[in-house]
Length: 233
Image (tube, rainbow, N blue to C red; front, side, top):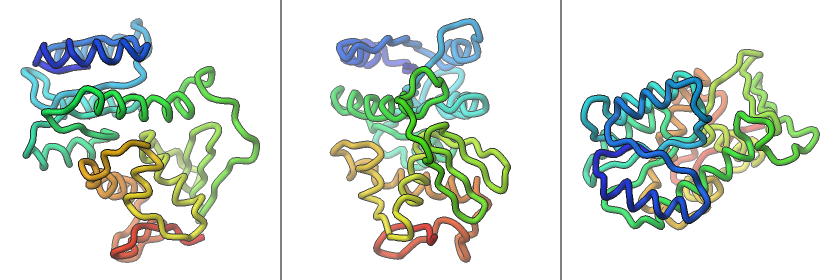
């Protein structure tokens, strides 16, 4: 966790440790970045980053992480920082929590992200036993669910856990419309939709960019106004 407010770090650390998680805290972005780039240190499974930090800010740190890693990133933002929030999601963050927040809210977000990452994350030994035949395909797009890999016309795509989950849900819907609310609850499994509803829109936009999809004439993710999203199969 990286946040220059020591009181917040110490409080959150206690709550997360009570859940059996190992927590490392940093009070500036430069120290956190040095830890991220330390190839000899233990692997990181999730990052919680405050946007406003001295030196290297949270947005820069998020971008640096996404250049090499796909583990989940949760951004901490002050109330009213909507533009920075959207930028964080566009840079590859999976979720955000607005300050001031209840510690249990952040714990719920962390646990939701960790469940998905440990199931589908990069380390094979950390996954659940895969089910055979879980390949989801559409127009050159291939999602290998057990291996947590995605290719488009045989070209690998680097997706965050949230982006992968969105594609999986839409492909499994087999052409049916899935609302933003339903996507949010299926992915995060918590009761904070009203605070995080806009994140799904940003993740969809980021996915379209990676797929080279057109908003006006989409080949993959289509918006059904007032209803949600679908992939026609």
